[in-house]
Amino acid sequence: MDSIGYHFGHDAGAAHLDEAGIKRFLSKERFCRIKHALGLSSDDVAQLIDGCSKDTAIGLSSTQNVPIIFDSNFIVNIDGIETGNSNAFFEKIGPTHPYYLQTSWNNNIANSRCVTVDESQFYYETYANSNCNASYETLAMVGYADPVLNTWMRKSAKLSLNGVDRPATFYQHHLLHAFYAAYAISPDKPALIVTGDGGIGPSFAGGGIYFWTPPGNLRPVAPVDGWLGEFYTTVSILCGFDATGGPGKMMGLGPYGRSIHMDTGLIGTRRQVTLDGKLDMNEVVWRWLVRSNVDIAALSNWNRGGRIPPGNVADVAATAQTIIELNLIKLLRSAEAIARRCRHEYESILLCGGLALNCPSNSTLNDVLKVPVLVPPAVNDEGLSIGAAVAAYVDKHLCLPNGPRNFADSVYIGSYPTVDEVEAAGAELGWKTIAQKDTMLYETAQLLAAGMIIGVCSGRSELGPRALGHRSILADPCSLKNWEAVNKIKGRESWRPFAPAVLFQDASNWFDRGPSFSPYMLFNYRCTSKLFPAVTHFDHTARVQHVVPETGLLYLLLEEMRFIGRDPILLNTSFNGPGVPIVEGIYDALAEASRLGLTYVLTDFGLLCREQI
Image 1 (cartoon, rainbow, N blue to C red):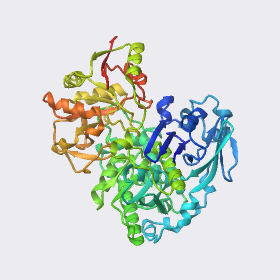
Image 2 (image 1 turned 90 degrees about the horizontal axis):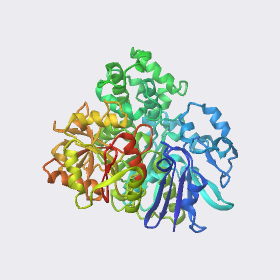
Image 3 (image 1 turned 45 degrees about the vertical axis):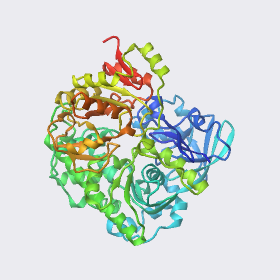
Image 4 (image 1 turned 60 degrees about the horizontal axis):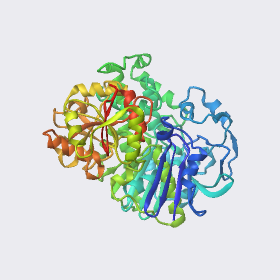
């Protein structure tokens, strides 16, 4: 009873499940070292499928309208869709598009064959743009779960590897976001699921509302013709950021400003804000800023290296954040109304898709809704391969594989460095062990207390865009200088915030106004203390990570901080420099540490020091 899921879009990956849960996970970007890597090779496909039986269920996924590109050793066929040449796609998007970099691991990309799954090839696109998306009020009037909608989200397919054909199913993008969320954080409890993406054009691909009923019943209830992520991305580009990392930076920029450019015309569905499709998102944003008397040309002309961002840019970012949150509240209220009308009972609301990376929005929704709001660690497209494996398993076996026993089983699923690998990488790259396993935590705690910045490569790597203690850079949060020092090491703007990792049982001493448990660093809390300036943002908030024994080595290190007389809290950020993914193996970790100028790296087997400093 196995299943495999492949995601071929950006943040590509693959997952192998059996009845016990996740057996293996592959993140393409972590191994090819290209951020948001797009596509898989035949070797990637073979890594998971070799040795599996012929009846292994296979689920396929791609980013909307991004082709599945294959090499000479594997081919994907999807019912009713013709194959073509990838050149046509790349000529259409232009040479400056991020997809060129994201596919640069494939030297033969220009000569590759591909299949492009366009949203118009599915019947649900017409359904999505029907009157139910005319307004949030009409969306709330949806009164039943249409079983046909579920059928429309699947297409029969075939995966051929080295001449061997295997039946497969291609699943709609947001159905897989929903399957992943249900499996990762609510496998045994009913939930209401709402998905939304980070920056796309008008189609049902923008999101959806789903009912989850264990052990495996996921029902699409209503499409959401989403525009919020596209709006936020468009504003971030006008503020001088790029299309991929810009929304995350603008999230940190907003607290420096005021929501003084509010426009009630932007509280509504896409049909409403685009005047029934007469405007594209660029026109929507430009008209809003012109009505608000914002000097658009001046928005991108500012020094992003300064300590405090200029008010004109921060005010636009703050207002965009408020617009997002007000729309999300209305969208979630509509979803709740549908659930009441359909008499669907739920214990929590699950958010998934790139839009759920917005921590302030997540926190606002958790505050205003009556049930807990839960967000899984890989809300971005990195979770889609798991969603595809889960969907294929459920379709074949009519039940869910065993879900994660705890939060750690849903996030720490990558590769695990062995002691031999640590020793070999250290010898090759010039790192030596200065503290063995019995003393390494004490020595590391002392170094952190003295102001040193430490890399960590421990246990299985974490899934998703947040480093959660297994592939992290750590520092003392009590010194504002560490905010500046770590930003300099990582090549980040100095006004951007860092997150605190804090022992769960102690967190309420310094943080409030947030969920009772936040292990994935996806919610903001209010800081009630001035003791930790390096992890306290301009608006006195912090993106808290609650640390428990299941977190692993970070938990033991925080306990050691307490032992030496320090508070059990550390600055925690991802172990990577600008423009590259989080490190995966120990070789990457030591190489990246050398490049960034770090002196120490903590592993499960000892504390390492760079020999040539």
